[in-house]
Image 1: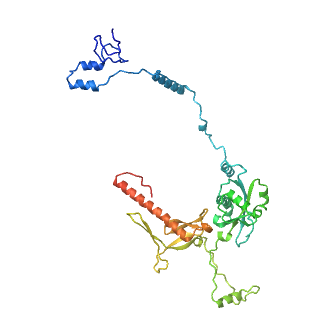
Image 2 (image 1 turned 90 degrees about the horizontal axis):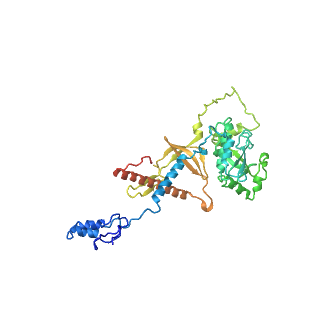
Image 3 (image 1 turned 90 degrees about the vertical axis):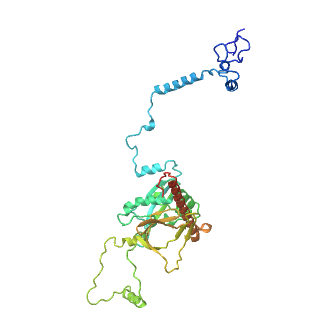
Length: 419
């Protein structure tokens, strides 16, 4: 009987391994048996071939459901769909040639309140009341006008005041030499009612709710001005008390009284209701008008004497130590500096002033809200926190310098812009 083509066998019984090879297409022995027949049975090559050479094409599997052909056809179809489809214009790329909305103040206010319901926004009505001892003090300044706008609930009161002052300064600087700043004004309710302590830096909604829930809410919201009464929703009627004496400080110095004799002579010479006697030539004024800005620098800044603290850092261990000077020492080293009298920026806890030491310019911070009760920050606490902040800065500088040194030794290029 003739063996099948896929079987390793011949017409002679006993030849071949007798295994079945599904991919074998010619009758006779398999490739391994043909290889063994060509070798000497006593040679090492025969033994290695017998034990190490595998059987090729023994159990080859066919294509599973023609997957390769199916994948090629799917790819060709997808590519044809993408290349033959009709292009659609992108609506996001259709940019109008010009602005559709004018970027004026009312439009910006409207966009700023996007995402807030009108019922959530706070309507703020603002007037300016003049303070100090000059003419017109205690009255509403009609030249500043009345400001009424709607603000989102999370907007800080300080930002609202800054926005109002920016609008007022256009008319204010026409009659006054200096523009209005937050350091010149004090927040009050309509009718010159003072606000609750520690509420000036709240968000406008928190500010409204804090005063509405207080026992004196009738004083804050019971007597609204005429134009504020017609506003719907949550309304705040506030005033900004403008301290004219602080806004325009005197450039001269007050005359000091001398001894008792001189003081009695001055008093008797200027007794109200009596005109002093004069003899001889008429009195002539020696007053001379000084040029504008002669004492301006003295009015804007104050001279200070600074004492410096020595900071030492160990180059090996990165340990930071402080050497505080003895203020009672007669040979105490000081340095002159100038600080501006008015803050250029204010936050929830501190005012910022411009400070200059020689040709170097810095920012000095003064804390005005230091907490109350158990949250009070003492001078000792402030000194401790300041030392911790300086320690972190010096340690960061130490690590940065060591990092640069190591990269230079390893010939690694790094960005040199960090300071």
